[in-house]
Image (cartoon, rainbow, N blue to C red; front, side, top):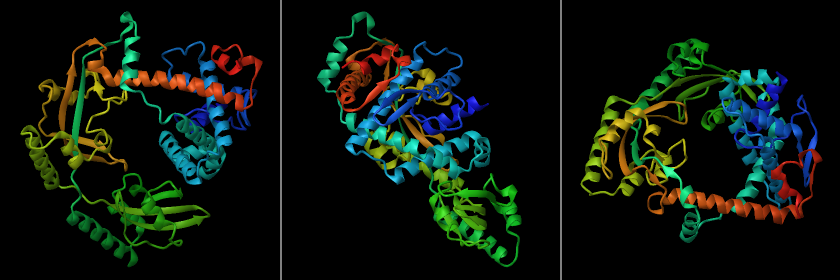
Length: 456
């Protein structure tokens, strides 16, 4: 059980990064296997990351040298951190707090509740943040140093061509048929009338409570927060950073037993009451009323999208202009309306990667064509599922083929950039390891990846 807890602790500190220090209560072996500047690497640091990877890849055995790869990555992180200390690269308190909040919120979602997370570790959220703060700060500083060293690295068209030309003919990769898709997404906006209706409804509920009605009973009757209404609107104990700023700004100003005015947040309209205060913790109840999207709001969006697709098909408006002016999806909007394949991170999709309901539409389209207006739903930042519409553009479609500069320039460019970054990284390590004290334990010197750290 302790071993599993150590692995989860490593995950909590790192989330998707690497390089946390071992915790004081761990049962994994604590042996210093490297020192870089003022920073140490413990054998348990490597082991915790290895066990995390093994748990994530249970169906596939890890490579025999995986611990060596992880150790090499940790050495690099510590070298970035050490050089950052020399170059006075720092992370602000606000940056550290924001990253701590992000990771704590993620793990609250993994465990199911704040209480379950606290129960598992036997510590409050505040205590957990205190435990992990130093490691998070070091990771952010290391990442900043890495960005400073390589963020401006680019590859020219000539370098891309040179990279492609040096690939042996029998090693040029083969790509399956792929599609490149664009989208314009629109969601209905809550009307001023619906907002006013929701606010007035909550003001009426508030008046009843002021006149003597029981808050919890009214929460059970009217609140539209599915996670709290059955418990009389109770959110239990909260701490700063757990809820949206608009809610917290009011909650932390209230006295015990005081009822707030109506508060607007991205979720809707709330009234809040604070039952108890303990330092920076509040025991809170609320009632939420959400402004509604009506059928007429949805119909208005559908009609607007019909007009947009008509203009696109008539060439009276460009795709670029339509995306910039109308699309409500920030991710695709920022890259010219292109959809991102979550599996690969680029804009190319094999048919197997496309949602089944969408592939039937695309199969009937030719390159350059626009779909009819299609129903679309998306989970927003509040966790709510929004209903809207979208238009799909089939930008390109390739047949199965060997990679070529004409058809696959962006992929070849990415590979060329990765190779250039790797060479730049090796040169950076060679230059800076001599400026920082590096000592590696004999037990790790057998790793092939460590050779570059031992050579002059």
